[in-house]
Length: 191
Ligand SMILES: Cc1cc2nc3c(=O)[nH]c(=O)nc-3n(C[C@H](O)[C@H](O)[C@H](O)COP(=O)(O)O)c2cc1C
Image (cartoon, rainbow, N blue to C red):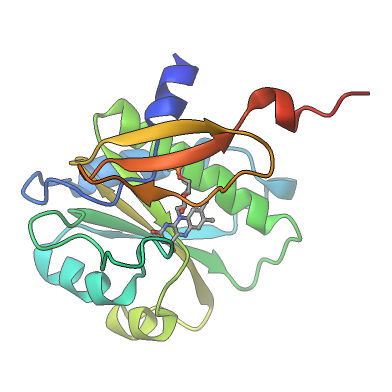
């Protein structure tokens, strides 16, 4: 079951925008992150939940989609995510493991989303200053990632590649998104 969830947990970038995601759903996803492990049990991550259309409009222009898809400018109206989770870090709680904490928290949130028939994408390429302004993020918090959440409207295909092969994702002529993954035998180092 975990394999199925992880296989389905792709980075989705096209959604059924009319399928609303509620605050309650986002709260339940953040709760999974809250219950996940973190370095020194420091719990330095905070979250803002965005579901209202007017607030979503403030996010759309300030996130950068799929750097490798040069001819694609991101999801068009109607296919944009219907919710976002802004992941913030309490600046007063500095732990050298916080990057790992964020990865674990993101994965917990996304696996929870997939279990609910949703999907998402972690977005690190942000216009941070604009988002900080738009959401009135206080000085003591640092914006780290935006996680897009919605009902996916995209098929994503995993392709096996050899070590040294091109790892760039790409879109075929039917609009299917392909993600190359290096073969298992190539990432396990022989002793
Ligand atoms: C830390 C991190 C930051 C990412 N930032 C972005 C981003 O800014 N924009 C985007 O479209 N995708 C982003 N992604 C998604 C990756 O491009 C995606 O995980 C990768 O292509 C592999 O696809 P998969 O998630 O379906 O396995 C990010 C993923 C991670 C883990």
